[in-house]
Amino acid sequence: MASHLGIDPVQLFIRFLLGLILLSTSLSKLFRLSRFRRTILEYQILPLSFASHKIFLMVVSLVIPIAELLVAFGLVSGLFLRYSIGIACGLLLLFSLAIAVNLIRGRSDLSCHCDGVFSSHRISW
Image 1 (cartoon, helix red, strand yellow):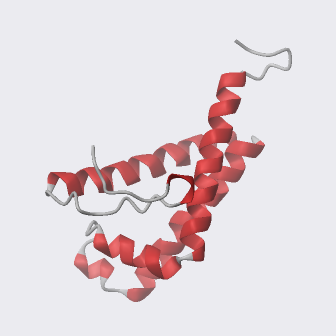
Image 2: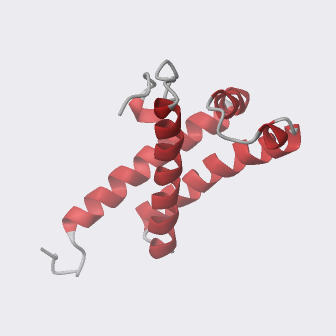
């Protein structure tokens, strides 16, 4: 159902909701970068050879929240919408895979580190 402006209100609602969620999680990570770096290490997804390089870890811990922030802006503003949707899907897939790998390893004692509007809780299916 499209409005008279050609904008589907359901799609607009989903864009705004996801945009606000990504905005809150990105700001939470950016304001607590050292904690986010520890989270990346805690999930044990990166090969040890990469994780042991402080510069690589610093770059990863900055790229993820900045990508979330840019995607949030794109989803809410509608600018570069196709790219924003694609990157949002990629980020959500990345986060889901990190959680799934750890659950398969039997590591359900980890915090999701979602922060933002979701707070944090233990990972689960």
